[in-house]
Image (cartoon, rainbow, N blue to C red; front, top):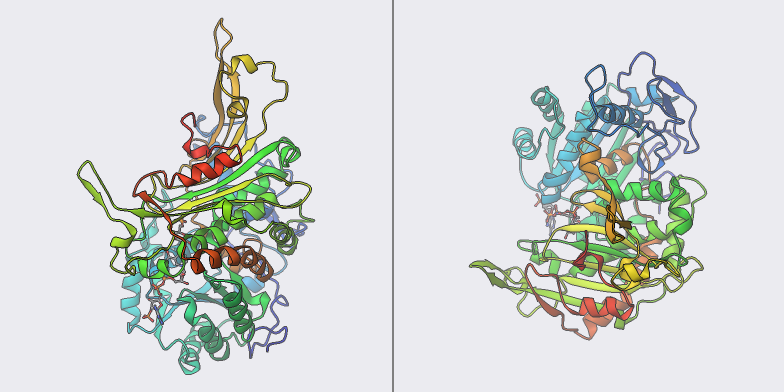
Length: 596
Ligand SMILES: NC(=O)C1=CN([C@@H]2O[C@H](COP(=O)(O)OP(=O)(O)OC[C@H]3O[C@@H](n4cnc5c(N)ncnc54)[C@H](OP(=O)(O)O)[C@@H]3O)[C@@H](O)[C@H]2O)C=CC1
Ligand SMILES: O=C1O[C@H](COP(=O)(O)O)[C@@H](O)[C@H](O)[C@H]1O
């Protein structure tokens, strides 16, 4: 068992080595000032019309002048005013401070274990490149791939290059930057359980780290969960940093139920300390999820409404317009509940429903989130609807059913859709249904939070609303993807001489307000690991509480071999989901005909 020193053989205790954002050349006037309450230093820039400046992420504290829409005429230097403000805000994420010199001089090695895999290619390498592209990587960085497949460094670079894109608009030196980045990428083949092979990797890393005082190392375990523990063991013994910190990103799934989670957790603790582990849930890295706490806690108009007194129900909806084609093998042993609800949607609920944290520090936020999970009532099986998609042939276009996938066992009852109602048993949320819904092969790809408010009591205009009052109630929609935005449905008078009410929306569409590229969730999260910021990562006790809620449901479904309700590929999902909502007097907001 390890002590506080983290990985076996680590010379330094995680946390003894304070971390700052990388140094990037700043305008001459930018100068470091003292840290904010998060223990992070800030940079003061004269051009920010800000009360405070601070890091990005949940702790973002830079307040920008929002009077000028992005469509406004360019400023005198030709730059769009909001673009300019965003650029400054981004620069503020690259914090400098007392330890900036350390950061500047330390080497950083990022090892992607499972480098030949799907996630690595699709998300991790592009994210690492984007971080570098944005000038957020420490100066002395190197990237290492590790997997069993045999590859030379050059073949590895070709593999990575194929998935890198110059997504960051209007920058001209992308090609050069890509070359520079690829030159710093290396590949080490090896067996996952072999300490010797990780030592070989470590020796190669030492070569690129040797000119720096200290070397910090990040290991991203982008591998199947069945080998998490052996990799953690071999890597910690063979390749921990001898001089700096060592952090390990662990991908989901974190177990399949309470028992397997406890085992995985205990096994990982044999090799890694809690402090070193960054359990990733990429939904927490999405722009609108990060904004959730800002919306609620930085606006007087929302927080007072955030309770059973005003909110009738909350819906967290995830849908994809494609099936599990090609991933059926993995999916069939997990199903949609483990794949999406137990992690992504439940994390959103806990962040949404938590009490005001003492501060924006990671532990304060996670303390509040875990309380929500522990306060949840056991899920009632009558509040669970499961479905599985079947093939569809519409207008000559054939779509396969889940069971048509060759990698799916014949007759599988694995749910590809689930809707459920959950309740938080505390004074804020007592009796408010939290309706969660996730499905594959549905009508559209979307992820959103819908907050349906109560109707106006004694509404003077009830006769004018022409429908039931609940339908005319306000609804706040946080659109996580696509078309990121926030809108509030309100009742408004139609202009003119008559007195007719119109349901319309106050609309903050990100694409019209901010002409900036939204960073991918993995970019933000990997950068947070480099910066030692755990606010957007899951703590062990959160998972423990999550599995406590979901394990009985999964056991019921699996032991009773419950039959999922079939729904056609590309439809709105099983009808049962609508009955579930109706049971609580609610309509799914995404299914409303009047979803303006
Ligand atoms: N892909 C995705 O979209 C997402 C993935 N994840 C999680 O990320 C992790 C990686 O996912 P993904 O890249 O899709 O996984 P892959 O199945 O592509 O596996 C990654 C690499 O691991 C090695 N590998 C695969 N199967 C085995 C095995 N049975 N034993 C030993 N090594 C194996 C292979 O490398 P080699 O043979 O070269 O050693 C492979 O390239 C998983 O934990 C997954 O659950 C999470 C969210 C989304
Ligand atoms: O974790 C997962 O997420 C993806 C959806 O992620 P998104 O960022 O594209 O919305 C999902 O397709 C996959 O099944 C699941 O494992």
